[in-house]
Amino acid sequence: MSDTDSLTDALQAISVSTELIEEELKPHLDIILSAQLGKQKDIAVQIAKSGILPILAQALQNKTSLSCQISLLLAEMAREGAVRGLCIEAGLVKVLVPHLDSSEPEMLLNTGRAIGRICFDNPYQQDQLVHSGVILKLVSIMRKYPENDPLVNVCVLALCNLADLDSARTALIEVDVGDVLIFQLKRAPDAERQHIILEILSSLAENDILKFQFVESGVPEALSELIRGLQGCSDPPTLCSVKIASNLIVSLLLGDESMEKCFGEGSGMVYQDVLSWLQSSNTQLQLSGALALANFARNDSNCVKMMDLGVVPHILTMLEQHIDEGDVSVLHAGLSALRNLAIPATNKVRMMDVAERIKSLLRSDMPPVQFKLLGTLRMIVDGREEAAVVLGTDAALLCRVTEWCEAKDHVGLRGEASRLLSALIRHSRRPGVIHAIVKADGIRHLISMSKSEHVIMQNEALVALAIASTINIESVKDLFTTEVLATLKKMLEDPTGTAEVKYNALCLICSLANSGVMNAELEEVNMKDSLKKLTDHSNSQLAAQASSAVALLGDAS
Image 1 (cartoon, helix red, strand yellow):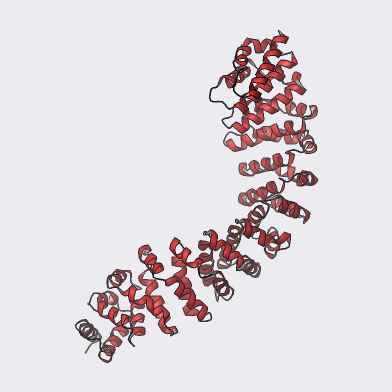
Image 2: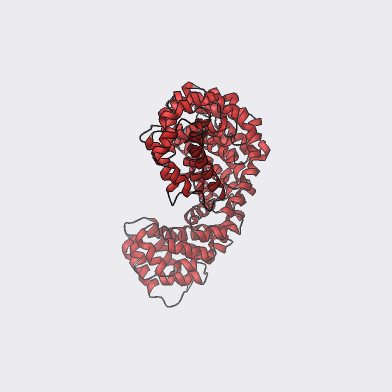
């Protein structure tokens, strides 16, 4: 009899059997399994359509001695996508799941493979698996057989397929999966296993509770140790592992408690390793290092400590490596970290020690980098008169900043450049700074900024212009044309304008009126009428300022 005839007879015998007599079924099952393992073309579909699947389901449900052989057969058959739907229709998934509680590793292996392949790329079935308790079973298997690589591989593949499901993440909260995954990550025999485990951790870390559990389980330290061991290797699989692991550390640092634990007052292993990444030849590690440092620098206490530990020169060295033709993402991340570090008042003073190195970065021709650099400089002068004077009288700096005020293709860069000019005036209030900005043709950019659709920018510009006109009206008066004054008048009359904008516009008008050299121009646009309308405004501060302006114009006339 040919193999084909033997298979046909075996399928026929099982499909018509009315009783599950194991001794009778086994010879037929042996023939079917042998045919399947022989990988004959379309054999799996032939078996699935023969009508034996319900019989196999019943045998699995009864937990007969044939269960292990049946699960192996199903695992092999389910390699074919056309078979999976038929297996699901026959109820095989439901009867396979209880076998994940078996005490036999071979049964666990065959069952895990069968379930994994049948439910592959089927979100509904995967969600049903989770609700049937499969998560707990998978983690239990990994705890019980941590050295059984084939079995562990089946479990991590299953978890990888389920990790994106919210139901799976909720179930995993209850089983403290972090320590299990880290143990397997440390003993992973190859890069492929590493990647799978790292992908699981990355997906699960999107859940805030799991993220915190991972930190408590020592996941960041394990990842940092992994990266340390892989540095120096340049093969693609290793570089991929480094990228996933370093990105995951950055993600884990987003939680405040997680970040503080990893920081460890500046002595934490993760923080120390992250700092070393800045000096790596691996651009991805430099990027992750800069992003991680920006996360560590999220509160004043950490920023001051990081400054004490000398983090800024490390960041600047990395930035200098990339500033000409380097990686824009690294530059962007490094400047974000630098900006965060400049927020505490004590750090602003110390930042001036490296001001020349920071200013040297101005040569960059990349708008995203220029944008971040301007924000960093603005943060350094915030509330610091000395810093504002030093930077505000630097002709080369002002020339570059006013150049960026006219950036045609980058609105954010234009805005940030104008905001820095405003900050230099507001925080210095010095004639020398105003003279330098006028000489650099910066005042006209502040006038443009005062018309911004963003209220905060309007206010900053109006305050700076009021200060400039108070201190040195002669140098700025020619820029306050009739058109500009008409714009100020419209601000006062705008029914949708905020009280703060109107108030700052009034301060500027008072400054212009008080100088005595702009009276004719103010009268020409009939400014007094607009001012009188605000003298009974519901905002008492605004009304008082309007009355002061009216009085100034009255006295002048």
